[in-house]
Image (cartoon, rainbow, N blue to C red; front, top):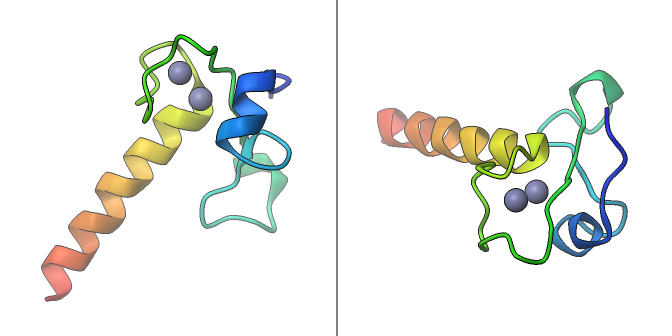
Length: 69
Ligand SMILES: [Zn+2]
Ligand SMILES: [Zn+2]
C-alpha cells in the first residue's frame, strides 16, 4: 500500500486510508493518493486506489440495496 498524500488525508480523515467495510483487516485498506487537482468526488481516475475502491464499493452497496428493496 502506498503512503497517503496530504490531500488524501483531507478526503479520508484522519489518516488518508479508505477502509471500506473491512475496518479490521489491513490487507483490504487502500491509501488515498489524490492531489488537490482531483475532482471531488474522485472516482480513481488519477490512479488512486482508495477512491477507485470507494467508488466500486458505493456502486456495489447501492446495487445491493436496490435488489433488497
Ligand atoms: Zn483518492
Ligand atoms: Zn483522485
